[in-house]
Each structure stands twice: as C-alpha cells, then as structure tokens.
Image (cartoon, rainbow, N blue to C red; front, side, top):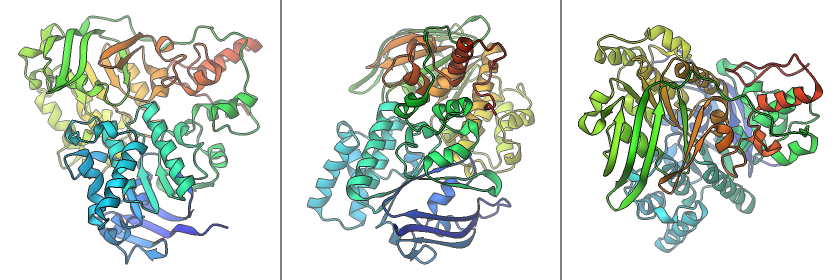
Length: 558
C-alpha cells in the first residue's frame, strides 16, 4: 500500500474578516506518485485546499486555520512556503499573477536560482521543459506579449523546472486550446509515470482529465459529503450536469459502467443507423442590423503579424464563437474592436461608426468587453459598488443590479470585495459589471475560466437570451462543448486568417481538435448529448422525447 505524501486532517479554513468558512472540515490522503484530481463547484474551496499544500494557507493568507496538513512528513503550520517550495511546485489559477521575469527563459530559471541549482543543471532543465511543454519558440518572448494560454504553459514549465516531488495545479488547462491541453496533460502523465511525480490537479473540464487520473475527490458547497475514490466511481455519484458528456450519455442510457474515454464508450454505445439527421441548432431571432464589420484588417505588433486580411460581419442577434489555437489572435481581435489596438491596414466599424475615430470610452457606450483577466475590471470595495459605478457612467440607464446579481448567482456575494472571490466568481462578477449597462455588442474573452458546469450552463442560457433579445455576442473560447450548445455561428482562426466560418455543425463536426466528445463517438453532425438522445429516440420510435432549447440535459432514466 502506498504511503500518503499529503495528508489533510480535520482541516478548516476561514479567511480574515469573513464570516463564511472557505474550507469545511476535510480529511484526505494523497498517495505518493498519485495523479490526483480535485473537482467541485466554483467557490467550494478547491483553490484553498490546494494552497494548503505549499503553505500559502495559512502563512500568507492569514485567518483561522484548524486541523493540520502534512506534506512528506512536514506539518505546514511549522514549515512555510519557503521551506515547502523545495518539494512542492505550484501553478496558480491566474498564471499571469505569478510571473516575475520579463523574458520566458528568465522565468523558467528564476525558481531554480532561488533554490541554488547549479548553472549547468539549470540550463539543462530549461531546455528540457521548453521541449516538454512545446514552448521553445517562446524562449526569448516578453511574457506581457503572450496569450493567456501561452502564459499558462510557461507557468507550468517554470514549476516543473525546479523538479518538485509534488506538482499542484489550479485549473491548468482553463486557457489552453485542445491540442495544447492534451500536450500538457501528456507531459504530466509522462512525468508521473517515468519519475513518480505526484500530481494534484483541480479542474472543471473533466472530459480532458478524468481518464488520466488514478485518484479523485469531489467536494461540494457548504461542506456536504465529499466523494472520493477512482474517477469512474466518483463520476458515477456526481451531479449529472458536472460530468463529461459521455458520462452523461451513459447515465441517461443506463450503461453498465461509466466510460472515461471515447474508446470505452464505443464498446457499449448505441450506434445510429443514420448519423446525418439534422441536429437542433441554437435558435435566435433573425439577424438584425450590422453590429460590426471588418474590411481587410491587418493586426499585429512590432515585428510580428497576428491577423491579416480579416473580413468579417456580425449582426445583432448572432452568438458567434471565436475558436483558434493559443496565440492565433482571438484576444487581439477583441481588443481591436474596443479600440485598444488599432489596425495597421483596413477599417473596423461598430454600428456604422469607424472606431479609428472613437476613443475606447466612446465605444464602451455600445460595446461591453470582459477581458481574459477579469480582475482588471474590478476595483471597488464591494461587488455591488462595481455595478453602481458602471451605471453611473451610463447615466443610470441599464438593468436592475440586484436582479442581475441574482441571475448570475452572486446575490450572496454582493457585499464582498471582488478580489476575495474565487476565479469563477470573479468571471461572473466582471460579466455583471458589464451587462448592467445593457451593451448592444458583447465581447467575452474566455468567460468560463474557473466556472463549474452548472454556472457555465446558466451563463450559456443567459447569453442565448441576450442574443434572442437582439444583442450581438462574440465569445472567444476553447470550450467546444459550450460552443456546441449555445453558438449560432463559429469562426475558426488559424495562421492569421479566418479558416472556417459557419454553423457549429459545419465547423465542429469531424474536426480532430475542435469536435465534441459526442461527435468523436458518433460522427456525422451529432455534437451534444441532446443530439445523441434525440437520434436514438427517433430510431426506436419514441415520440415523447423532448429537450428544451435552453438545456442539453434531462434527468436520467430510472
């Protein structure tokens, strides 16, 4: 039997000046050499639980700390972050917040310099992690010029370069495109198997990670009973809407065991006779007036082209998903639409006005923008004050702030400081601060980062209602499962150009990297769980099957 390398014993955490308990009584043993997966709703204490491992809780956070956490025999109440850094590598939910050097290569070496690693060994390890994470091309780049996903891989590489015995990662694939996410997980698996590295990872997108883990824990809000065991056993007991699509499908259809991979699902899945039956595409009103248009737009930075010859038109009522690998220009395009980045060539018009003639503050009267780092929008002492500030800038015209907070599940947090919220809660807080002004064009850059499945579903329903109400929405994301459920149109960027532009079934189906789990399982134009169930129901002659346009989940049979 393996010896636990991390032990939680009756751990409770309450942060300073708060009434709520951040982490309820927790007992957990992470075995040495394990690949342990932590899941749970936003705000359930996952980040707090992880920060106990390197001593940030309680040495940096303060507050009230009960129980004990032991890491390789060291009680973290006595061993602080400095001592634990020799054995624990940590990657935060916001990788940009842990960057200390300007150049990527210097960032990788910084941690080893603090640990006194010999220069020759340091240079060798830098080369190894550059290749392992596929970021050799970023070696001399300024971190400020990297995309969110590129920064995330740099942060992981910096943690691995110090050769820790335990690697702790908080949402490590949240900003990664499908290929990059698979590369990172493959690298972690290789280190876990070949070197015995213990990996402790918190993640919401379980379809990416569940098959890699050998130990899993699911924690709930409010200190409910946690689930613990193998990923297959835990997924079988989790709330349905928090599980990957193929697990949802298996539970609907009563499969004998929960599949973790497409290969396992194919063994017991229903195979449709016809996989070309029309799927239910997300419905909106007929597209209205032109919200924005780009004509022959070139965007880039000194010495580096990002986008070239971009021609694009988006109308009110459209919900457009913007896909593309890390560094493909999604964020640059959104920033250009807000006037933060002026095109070298071409013209951008928003509601008939050329934005080259407008300041960002003028554009913001019609356009709402939630950036990849939502914390940059939040500066007030209370969340409620954030919404009040936005309304003041718009002469009091907008939505009811309390109703909007309730719709986004933030009512109980209205008097909290925005910086004290979890990652997913901050995303929703920033969205509320923008939506309260009723923008006619909404730009969202990775808005589901840190959100659990139920909150993501609620966000999708909200965005769909906004689109039906005539708002034009552009959503830059890597979450193809969400895109398949809510988008009316998908645009794929590649090598500075628009590679594909069409309905979700046209762009996502058959893709090697951007298809959904259901599409990989069945092919054709089936993308979601609802598509698969609808197809099965039609073949067996069931006439009472239905699924609402706002929801891809129905209660499992039995």
